[in-house]
Length: 269
Length: 274
Image 1: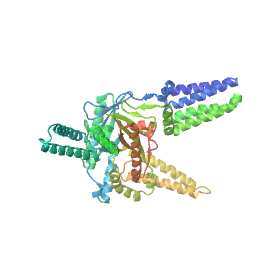
Image 2: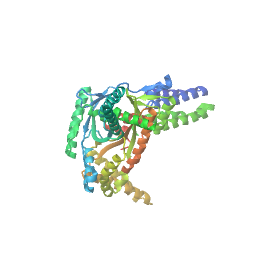
Image 3: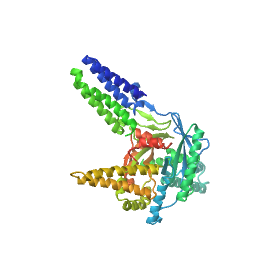
Image 4: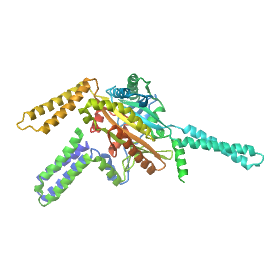
């Protein structure tokens, strides 16, 4: 729309510049026409930057102010709004536990061919992804930290009373503190990672429910095809399982990484 | 180039060319107008073909950060998507992964195909073993219409065969041209044979994604750059042409996390990949 207006204006001014007989005026019109043509071209990709240029420098341009996605009420897909359109996407987890190390050359080639076949299962575009993510040790770390705090508190309270009376108990509490601290250190130090293979399909719908139902139906069909091709039990992911495939804080869980960062900082200091 | 681009670039450039054509009519202002016109034409071409360079420059100069959604922010360097959660910065970056070996392999399909397929599982496992940070390898695909694809290929072969017969019938046939046309026929024929063998033509687009975490934005983005360089190295085993995605393409690829585009949109955005 804006492109059409700009180009229209540019053409009209160009024509006007041809008609006007005063050199200076026609040159000015020609310059305006060329600038209008440039603006017309910029509307293709840079239209949302005009606001920043016109208003002030250093603005935050908000392309979309809402959440990146919302979970469908059924919990088996996500819903995303783009302008007037509502899209839903469903995810299929493919649990495959085969390794190339235990196969001969033909078997390896066959496995690759099977994956090739998956890609042609449907005419609707699908995304096949392999994700390596940090294993979520948040709960375990929180539990270890609670135990460590508890034993440290116990040890401190024993120190504050008469030392001779509780010597045996104190030794034991100190041992416990060391044990929990060592355990916490070793758990958060190691990089535990897991690999998951999944497919994703999307659908456009009139509303959240319609889009979600179509996406789920497509996902079910695709899961059936993948299961039959690879000989695995592919299934449509639901609920919190989806978040590991989507959000960075689930790909690298907060507590797990915080503890690692804390240790790194302490060892650096 | 898609139709939109042709339309935008063609119409804008046409107006400038029109003005330049009548430059002699502007008297003493002719020279400045010619210089300005050439400059504008240059800007249009650069912005069209090197948008990935121009866009980050603009955002840096204007100090503009882009919010893709409530929690996802693209810094002015336009090379990653940032998310701030519980005092930690998560930076996600993307790499393109274009297969550029295919055309050459197609000339001698049998010899290359067997090796490539049997090496793929080992190559993949080596990549996973040598990477100790989170990443995603994404492949978007869709089956093409076999009949239409075959007809297109046959049409291509017919056209090249016509060119070949024309060249061979010429009074002074060029040996190099003949060899080049025969090579093209071989490639198309190999593709037709593969479809006859039961292979399905597929539209596909690949990209790689990695996420890093840090207590500051700089730490997260620096770590992400390290991770992406590592991925660039390890994925070389697959003979892929890999480069970091910056600028507006980053916004498009980030959107693919939440929605797989329809075929037409994919073709428009990833024309050069397929």
